[in-house]
Image 1: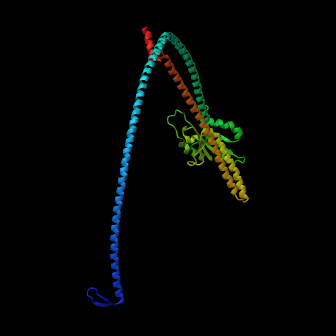
Image 2: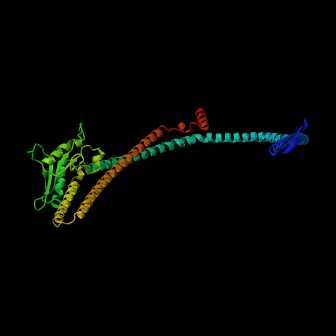
Image 3: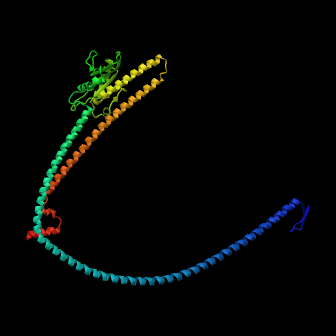
Length: 427
């Protein structure tokens, strides 16, 4: 226990250690806060004094710098004024010199103009003296030139006309060649053409083959031609029903190729033919049928459409395919009899089909290339003809201009020559 005397009432009282420590802590905290406030006030005063001192120092520095700048500006102003005065004096001197040179130039220009006028007058007099003789000479030269030009123009016109005629003949020959490539008709009907083409190679390529017009109307309808070929044992190798369709160029109502498909398919079935082929010149501008052999089996089974130039190649392709097929069938029978795996046969069959498709594609490409080359030749010759016609037109215009050529038109716009003509007429 601790005994404490109150400073106000002088009474003594006792307090334990915890209370004593708490009172002592309160006294210390109060003293610390008082001391802290005193130090804050002192620091604030020191800060204000330092700020005031710094402001005063900055103001003094600025005043010194301003005074120095004012002196420098005054010095530079004096130097600039002196320099401007010197420059003005220099420019005045240069201006005086330029005025003197300008005056001298004006004098020289007047003298040069006078000399030039004298030369022009002399030239005018010389031209006036020689004008009459030149006029006569020019008239003779123009007449001679006109005669020569007319003769040359006439000769060139004749040459160009001959060239145009030759080009026209060549274009006609190319068109006829293209027509023969597409039809090979030579004035015959399409059926006769196909019959003649087949008979040309029948003895060598198709001996013993049946190829005749279909005259059997017992079924109510007939095709145009039937192709049949049998092996030595009498088994049919291949059979084709042909339909030939053509029309005149001046026919008003043009027929469609696909309008004959149904009838052709019925004829094929009634005559027991394996394939149906239409040989036609219809729809001459249809690019589909102009590309080569067209397979339309997606509409009717084993049906093809061709142009006349593919008549023999089509028979050959189908016949070769049929002959190969017979060989493969015989081989298949032998394999079945011997109970051997037929996988090799299937591979060969696929290889044959791919080879057949490849050969057919190559034939189509070669035909398309031939047609394209002919079209390019026709186009080129047509352009040459147009250029020659344009040349003749230009020559005609040149002849018109020559006929309209005179001495006065040649001197039009030339004031000197016009004046000389006027003086000549007045003289």
